[in-house]
Structures are given as structure tokens and as C-alpha cells.
Image 1 (cartoon, one colour):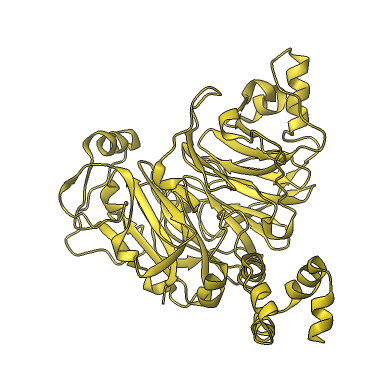
Image 2 (cartoon, rainbow, N blue to C red):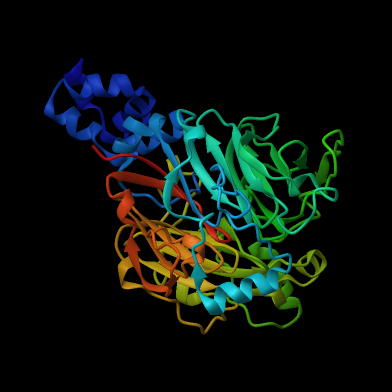
Length: 479
């Protein structure tokens, strides 16, 4: 039987047999001979098993290696949070001597942070600290909002802690209430992907359903007349991507004041909503605007939400920034709101197929948060940008991020980069300890060079979620 299997064409053996075996069967087959041992150590095979058995979101990272190690220990994932904890957003019990100070004016709060550095107070946590309450829950992805976190577990449940509306009082919004411990969001469907804006979250169900919310008790379903393949939260609204490559803008969920309220389903007619590459091109021709023609077969295959824009990647490797802040102009004059970022796109023929087996055909990748974004290439390059960049703006290139980076995440003034080898590098403002290097109660100058977090050197970090003045990571033991 073994010889007959090895006589099969390699693509049939891998795609039709090995990809359909469970992990235990793969391990047993690997013990039969050297040829199968080599085949079954293939990264793409274990990537498939991770996605199939652990509900990892496809757009969570651009990981190329480490999948087998991840599979073997993913059920024992450890959740870490650190940074600003004055309001208890990290999920850890507040310290006795915490300073009870709260800035209601975010502009003043930002001004202090941007121009005066960060003083780590006794309430803040300046190095990664395990969130013990999520131990054993099988957390596989984590994202940060403006004042809190959401986490996705392997069973499709979503956990929330912190505040959704940190700039409101509780009598005006359920989301303004502090959720001091990780709490399940009342979503009726099992979820496969989550994304957070400043004060809301949006999720894609395993059954294709779409949901959004700004508190853990009352959620709203978004019904779309076309299949949705990706959701992303912008800062104050959301964007959906259909299987046909249409970007649809969704308003922030309605604010509710008590848990007894119910929200009717939000009905979206995909035919009458959103933009495609083709509709942008048609608007440009109609208004005699300069726009490079869209090749036949090209479409949007991935997107990433920013504060006022949505970054999109096309099937043939082009990168566009679409100003999605306002709904009406987006529908009426999309070409005037679209900028091609040619310095981030492919310079030679490239194919990106999200419909391929576990993104195995993605040669470029995008991620974003608040006002910053990253574009990743198959040869290991990471190009950083800002939502205000023009077509002529050169990408920011950090030497430390040009090899083996699979995810970059952004807070207000600090950033983190995750490597395929499980290291977490951080840089930027200390943000009350959010860069995670343990500096405490002293003025800390911003780090301009990404550096690995020392306290995580014995852990293999596989997911990160930065935002505001806080950070998070998921990890497994290296040994």
C-alpha cells in the first residue's frame, strides 16, 4: 500500500490524501519511511491542519513557517497583556496604589503621550503578564480596540474585556461599562475571524454570517446578499469584502443603553452598495481622471481597515488606498477617493488567491490599525506606511523587519512585529509600558529600533494585538 501511495502523482498524494488525514494519522504515516517523513514535515500541510483543527483566522498573519510546532502546542496557548491599566482594561486585578486619574479629552491625552513620553505608573504593567483567567481556553487570535481586547478561541467563541466606549459614561452606552475579566460575547454563531475598531468589533461566522457590536451583551447581525470572505474594522465603521471582490462600507453599530434592547438585522443589498476595481475605473473614465487600467480578472482579494481609509490588495498585486470615511462619496465618486500606492505593489507579475488552500497562493499581504499599515511580500520584505501617504511617498523600511516578519500590529504610538520564529519585536513610545520592556516609573525615550521583548524569550509568540496604549500576545512554550 505504501509503495502504491508513493507511486501517485505528488499533487494528488498531497492534496487528495495527506490533506484529508488527521494529525494522528499523519504522524503514524511519517513513521513508515523516510519519503513520507519528509512529505509530512511540509509547512503547508501543518498550516492546513492548524486552520482546520484550531479555527485560526486566515488573515491573522502572513506566516510561512513554524506551523508544525504551533499545531503541537496550540491547545496550551498563553495569553499576555501589558501596558496602560489605569482603568483595568488589561483584565488583571488593579493594583492597590493605582492612580485614579482619567483624561476625558482624548486630544489632551494624546498630546501628553506624544510630546512628553510615558511615565509608567503603579497601575500600569510594563512587561507581558499572563492573563490567567484565559488559561486552557484555547485562544487562537487576539485583537485590541481603543480601550480593551477581543480574543477568539478554537471553538469559535469570542471573549471581550476592557471598555468598548472609553470616552463615554455608562448611562449612555453599555459599552462604557468596564468588563474587568474576559467575558463571552453573546454571538449566536461560531466565529472564524474578528476585527476591532476604536469602539466596536465585527466578526465573520464560520457559516458566513456577519455580526458587529459595541458591548458583549447585544449584538447585531448584518445580512448581505452576497457571500462575505473578509471583515475588517476601521476606526469608527467597518468594511466587508465579498467573494466577487466588492468592498462594502458598514456604519458603526447602534449604541445601546441596556441589555434588554434588541437590534434588528441590518440588511445590505450588495448589488447597490460598495465599490469594485471596475467601478472605480469606470468612474475615473467618466470624469477623465488618471487611472491605470484594471487587467481582466483582477479584483480585491484582501483589505485592512484604517481610521479614515481602507487599504486593499488586488489579485495581481496592486495596492490601493480607498478613502472610506464617508458613505455617499464612496458610492458616487469612488475614483476621486482612490490612490494607487505603486511603491507598495508588485513590480512584476504576481498572483494572490485567497481562495487557494489556506492562502498558499498569497504572495503579498496587508495589515493595518488606526493610522498605520504594513505590506508584506513573499520574499520577506515589510513596507510600512501611514494613511496620509500619497502615491509618491516612499515606504518606511526598518532593517530589523526585512526578514521573517509575519505580522505587524500598531498602537497609537507604539508598534510590534512578530517573526516566523516566534519572536516579538517592539518599538515606539513607551505608552505606559505598552512596548513591554519593563521600564517602570521613569521617563523612557521612544525606541526607534525594534527590539525583542526579553521576558518572552522562552515562549514562541504566534499572535499579537496592539492598540491604544496597550498590547497583547499569544504564545506557546518553546521547549
